[in-house]
Image (cartoon, rainbow, N blue to C red; front, top):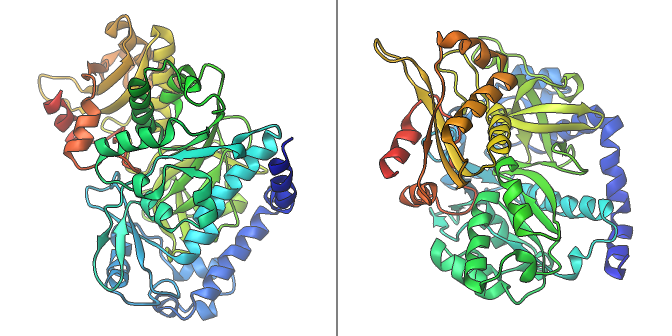
Length: 500
């Protein structure tokens, strides 16, 4: 074990013990988070409106404060953006993370308080490193640099000393000096707004450094890494960075990309997934596997509404004390950024309750249910993986949407897929995809019975670079922007098909 690892491990012992305590004290920790948030925000406008001073327990909190989505929360955001202090959190919010808007066409502006920066986002980043080192005591990660790929510095100053921009740009722009010592490239390059220029600058700045880890969104990072290989003429990343050992990723499902990253790193590479959104840092992959541990003491109180109850007249939220494994829950959060019972739009599914481990199963609005099939992103990712394994294919990007039935045409799902390695037969791939979907989703299987309700899926091959060009045309290059995977409408797929 290296000296630097020994120092870090001694420093981190108490923190690691605290994380281990989540398994036995989850309810107590969460109740403490809730009452702390209520107490701190008691004199804010929101706190006074909801009589926070009279709240003594969760039941009273749930009675007084309604569950909100962004549309319902937006009036408070507008007040904060106009420079008003103490609206939902006891400070003047100076940063707003501009969401890529994958749930709604409109952009969302998520308040980022100083407490959220320090006690949530940065704490989550530190815990990610600490838990990785605890699992890999012989790691040499800290002997080199972490290549971080974030958003641009296209920060909009809207007056009142208030700015909006990509979350990753906010995090990089406000990161403490000690964090910058371990990162590459330098801040001015990391925040460049022109994507093509950014690729060249990052390549020039990093190829001669001792890069031991990567951190970013898998899809965008893959573009950067391929650019670096093309520029250097190398065959794999270990020819450039022989000590590269870790990729910390998040933002999208990693399954379609894992094989490609393994091929780029023939000496082997470790993967750690994190769940860090504009609204907060929620989860870390603290051990081997495909699930993450819910982080309970970052100034966030969690509630969970079964996806089956979304849209019903009286959906009932559950706390951490009464969730179950195997159920898709819409996540509702109360945070030290001033979000109160805010429905984030993601759905998760618990795989364990001691500690609370989970996978991201989809979005509350990003699924296909045009025929009663209730196809979630988790179903889609599993089925695509099976189809790729069966046909020796690899996927770069994809999206899917319904083809609606009419008098002459049967309904089906249309999949627009950009392959990094095409299957030997699109027909065979389509059959494998259809069969896999029927295996992982009983509703889909029922609707596919004898092709009566839902026809065989249609797979369209996207040209090389299609999704990149679409993102560029829509001003969504880099950062945390994502391709919408599933949609109940044809808005996204039709605009992509026009470019294909």
